[in-house]
Image 1 (cartoon, rainbow, N blue to C red):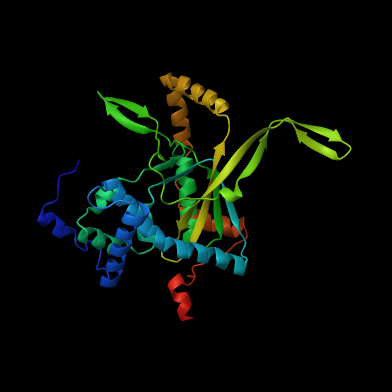
Image 2 (cartoon, rainbow, N blue to C red):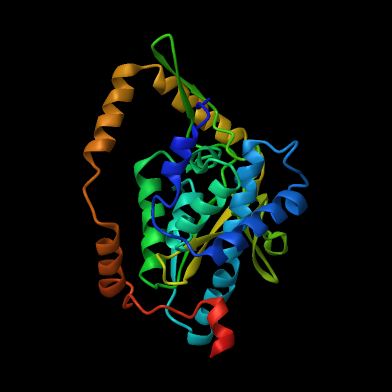
Length: 317
């Protein structure tokens, strides 16, 4: 646990990243307290640091929602060519700081949290990592989503909402110990469940010819419940969507596959060989450059640097 900050240290924190408008700070403080009371049903007497993190996350999320809806309306009106990026991995990491930076809220949030007597870094540390992947490919997919939003491309990410992330690492007596990463145990303030769009997905089975036509029978059916997460572009008011599906099914096959991985991990030579092979296959890249090239040469799209109007600006036009 970090030591309490002295008055001198707290003064050093004031407006470290720049000056924030008084009105913005006041509005953020009101929204923070509103979420603490009405969303989390807590007050300052019983609230924990995690509660304060959730209050701040919901406050920042409020600034996303209008842009999120407006972006989808804009895509519907203009009907641009869409990109659907499908990946088994999305290593998104932590969302709070990235969102504050992209929405230009970092300075005002810093000042508001300071005036409330809280420490921003402590609240940011409360967020769970969304480590939905094994590292390189998952992080690449996350970078692509960020880049496509910043480049003004109408893009959607599709993947799986894993209940457990990559792993939690601890060092015990000098040895690495891996534990399950239960990243959803406290909930996720950034996602929105869409039960109205739940769909059955069929696996296996066989085809059968009948007088009514060919039918797919004897299948294993799982239910896929989508959760939408906003992906904000860098200060352009564009918020794209990542849709991850929670799967309701028998996990027997998954457990068997995981057992195979665990057995391989017990063989250092074979495991190390696979790790080195995977690392050697990773090349350096620029996410923005790569996406721009994909857009122009493969998808037939032109990145747009044009900002769409913010929700607050619509009433003035």
